[in-house]
Length: 90
Image (tube, rainbow, N blue to C red):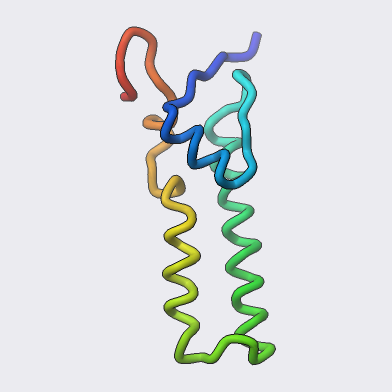
């Protein structure tokens, strides 16, 4: 029997912003890995844009900062992604 996860609403909102809607049996680790894969894809695309000359080298760092700001959920420890029974997020 698989565990059932109840996600913090703020985490669900952040995941939805990336097109992810977990099922009750989807583990936080799977979701974090999916978000991390999206981030990696976007950072690689940003790097390719730099190498192709679509982004000026002097502007690259600011593009990276903006991209990181799209993924604050990656800085939240997995333990805080789920709501513990009988209480707030732990």
